Image (cartoon, rainbow, N blue to C red; front, side, top):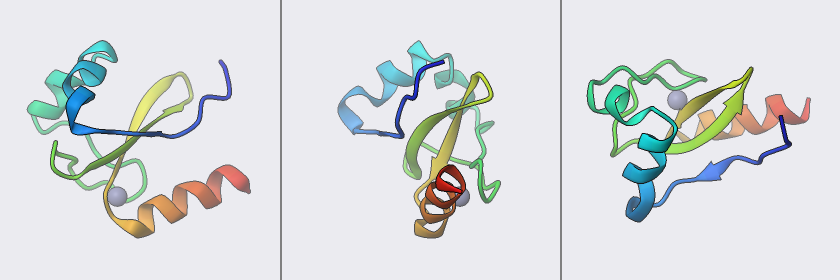
Length: 75
Ligand SMILES: [Zn+2]
């Protein structure tokens, strides 16, 4: 594992990134949940991807979730 930072997602390459990570079909199926708040993450609410315990987790676009994630990584 490398110290990969949180990746901001842009619409242009979102589908390609998700498919490469094997998450695209899960996102389209409504199966991805925010690591912090547990809300279903859709293409519209997907804010970031980040590695966690060998898998890729997603973060919704709730500002408090981003703050919580950053706080957890620093603490
Ligand atoms: Zn969230």
